[in-house]
Length: 420
Image (cartoon, rainbow, N blue to C red; front, top):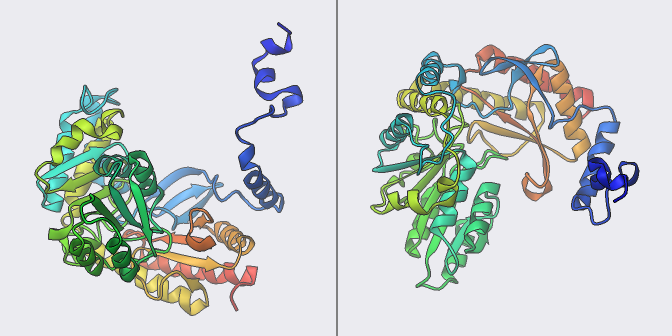
């Protein structure tokens, strides 16, 4: 054996650190080159921002300066709620740092049951199941419900976790045009009547912040004998009388079979869940692979989630303030001359659309230098090849902060030359 072969780096990289023939990462060369060309212009990497210190739900230290956060999903501002933080500290002291096990073996603690009880109370359902992430909730529930020979009908702009759940379950996937009730009806009409069918809808779409016409879509799905799963990741907390989501506000709660959501948005921690009134729902604990074969959430996390969910049941004032913030920012950005993803404020997400990546990154960097952080989004995450800055408002943003945000957008847009 040669000396080169005994050197791990040489084996992996070849001579002088070059990738070996048949390099499995070569398929990403175009993306690597595009990213490097962007960085060579001197801009910051929009996907490598580090928050050195988090001061509150709406402020952090980035590159040594205090920055307003407008790029988090902390819709209800629960991350620093004193009761939520105290619950996590107590669970950490009483149950330790982690479970080291799956929910079906040694990974179910009292806190997991209490978290599921809080979800059942919040949603008014008979069953709830908690996953380690929101991604795994969709991956697990969708792949378990619909398998080979079944059909999943979904919006073309559905979240990646929804698509991945479809692929894991090996069901036939039928896509309909984004938010088109007519196209949904037409495609359902072509499917075999006797086949198992699951229609997947989202309350709020995370890129543009638009909401689905759930009332009409649910009526179409029921007409064709389908079961319905609604993803309320971005609707939980501030839509509907009880904050359950767009499906509650649309008045279709009794027609939705499964509601999937996440703790990493309005709840302010991490984790995912599914709630349902289906009498056979509990069997998912035995057959859902992303539930059975994943370590459960740490005790401190489920404790913070349960405390947050119970407080969200009585968060009417927060919801009202969040909606006020959303309407004000949306109108203010329109008045400045920006192109937005929706004609009116439909959710806590406001997307500012740009004609190309260079303009979007230019405004993003100018905002960061002014002390404002927003999300830079590009294909394939965005629909129809859009480049946009996504603003996620928080119930903890003050009136003064919203005013500062508008001033920063005015300054940045004029500096880059994308608004008059």
